Amino acid sequence: MKKILVVFGTRPEAIKMCPLIIKIREQPNMECCVCLTGQHREMLLQVMDSFGIIEDYNLNVMKESQTLTFLTGRIISEFDKVLINEHPDLVLVHGDTTSSFAASLVAFYHGISIGHVEAGLRTYNIKLPFPEEFNRQAIDLIGDMYFAPTNSAKLNLIKEGKSSENIFVTGNTVIDALQYTVKKDFMDENLEWAKGYRLIMLTAHRRESIDEKLEGIFETVKKLLREFDDIKVIFPIHKNPKIRKLASIVFENVDSIRIIEPLDVIKFHNYMAKSYLILTDSGGIQEEAPSLGVPVLVLRDVTERPEGIEAGVVKLAGTSEEMVYKATKELLTNQAEYEKMRMAVNPYGDGKASEYIVDALKARLSKNR
Ligand code: UD1
Ligand code: UDP
Image: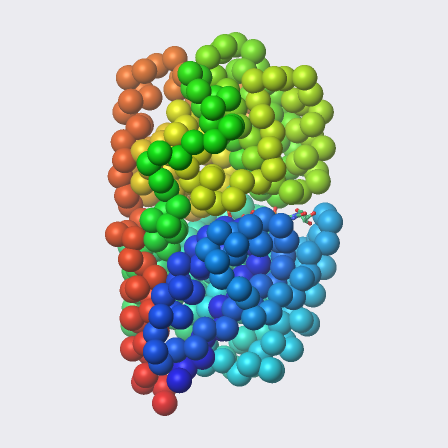
């Protein structure tokens, strides 16, 4: 029996790791231990509930407005105890969060193999996104198996000198997740409210935008809401108190926007599927939207996910008020341009990424007897 320890701490990691946990747990010769760092709390537990997965450990590290130093230190000291207790054959981490970086470092110190899901994404600007570009490069320095979602992620890893024997192009597990969530006839009260209007979903959370750029982006959305009376915005707001404070000030008394609590992933994916347009700085949403055929304007200056842009469904809108205004207005007024973006393509695999990852793990772990 081989033991895999899956560790993560935030909402997007959970959405992308749950389908994989389900697959690992179906294997007769594999044991799957799940450790939540608790970097997120409500937003993480919402996903665990949606997939019906119960964790073995929750390190519960989150505190309000946590700093990166606090988070990293707490995860390192708490996850160390879990590894000492569990002695897994391999630790699986995801993406580029502080949870993944800190847990990988602990596994490295213990000489335990590291499998990195969603490996190889890069901007090659170490401060954008901050601190995620550092986290993912650091994990890949000490990783043993790299599960790259696309060929271009694989090429980044090869360029950095990783051996192709350790790189597996699997697609992104987020596509596996969509198969659990999207339902054709989904409807609820918020969608009723937006019926007859063009629905725009808004999300925002990036650390590098919060202090300077987010206010301008919110002001731009307010301006567009005043200008266009046939749009409504739903903004499931991140739990970060800084974002909440800013949004409550900018959008005070604007009644064509609904600022609501983070949606569970089943609802969120169905809201996305019914949207006219998505404005977001999220990474995961850039990967989901092409499959759903919903245009996305990315509220960032760079992206490590070129596939959606190449496919034509995603556009980088930037972070300045003028650029976001121009890009959004274009899609609200130029129907031909909008239709060009509204195609469903799937650059992130065939929805079997979890299966491919499990196959690679089985083959590798059976060698290390
Ligand atoms: C983290 C990740 C980011 C990822 C994002 C997904 C890092 C450095 N950042 O950023 O890569 O894209 O998650 O959303 O790893 N909070 C709650 N409840 C929750 C979640 C958050 O109250 O369930 C509040 C807390 O006050 C917390 C703050 O939000 O301190 C920020 O959370 P944190 O995980 O530090 O940063 P994110 O911006 O969420
Ligand atoms: N999401 C969700 N509820 C919400 C907003 C987003 O379930 O209210 C999902 C979304 O579908 C995507 C993921 O959360 O799968 C993205 O998370 P986030 O934007 O927080 O992080 P990122 O992907 O940027 O790391």
